[in-house]
Length: 395
Image (tube, rainbow, N blue to C red; front, side, top):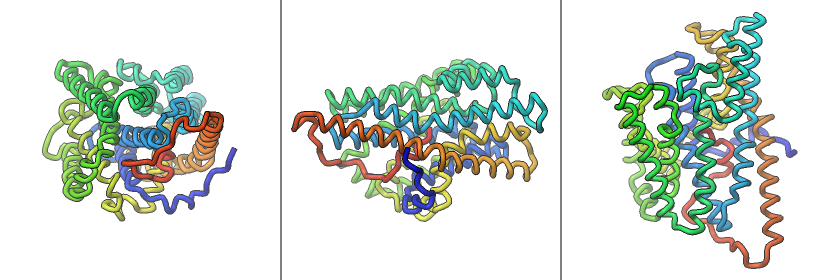
């Protein structure tokens, strides 16, 4: 297994997507710690992570197809599992620690009873937690954030084989229309259920009602490869970025418009579209966000945002639950960031690199065994190269 790269080696890797991720995770953590109620509910706050995930994953698959005319679906799954599951396992361990501490009174902990904790861990690892959450079932609070990870993983399960098949027999335009139709259907269905009186949990946590943002991100990743779209985004980058920023602030804080707490009606597609359009602008004009979103501090946090996302609630519950004590909140944040940094350095990076290298070696061996002329390699067009961007994907 190759050793993990030193943290300092990422000093040259500066892209505003990491800064966006950092800001999003700060808002999520502040909400769960109840440091502020300035932003809308947690289920709405993860829409940004969904948009980034859909955009980047689709861009990486398009890049692979441009390079090899194929998409290695199996290799993609292996890399996603290697990236997502090691920190998830660690979050499950922290949940069980919180439960044991509360049961045996080792220290002040708000963990639930062991049987309940084990049941929630089972749901998290089997990717069924989102269904329990949508049905209104009570779960160990430590792992409730995993519901959004389940949404990501269902998207991966569908998107990779769909793209592999459609790019083989259909055009990118057709694929983009399919993604657009899926996104629109999800947004409309969510609004319909909300207006129809469905429970808040059903709409806020549903796979069908919450997939719109991630699929919209996938649509945008295809759309930006079109020369006209690229030209429009580059020529109007500043105006679009400012407009999207204002829309995100107004909708996300309910400053002038009172949307539903978890943003499940018309505001969901508006909010998601603003985020996706901003990502599309930053994709071609990353310097537009400099030096704020590309600052060393925000990039560092953004690269570790997945671990912070998974660990902050278990750490909070293991240390006594929600509190208004400033110093204890600072301790919770410090512990969370420390665990996330250690996980990124010694768990996530080495495992992810090892699996990625194995996938590359398998692909190279397969190519070498094929007859000459099979699977012609073509130049990559339309998709900018972002070094190591797949390492910091969230959800």
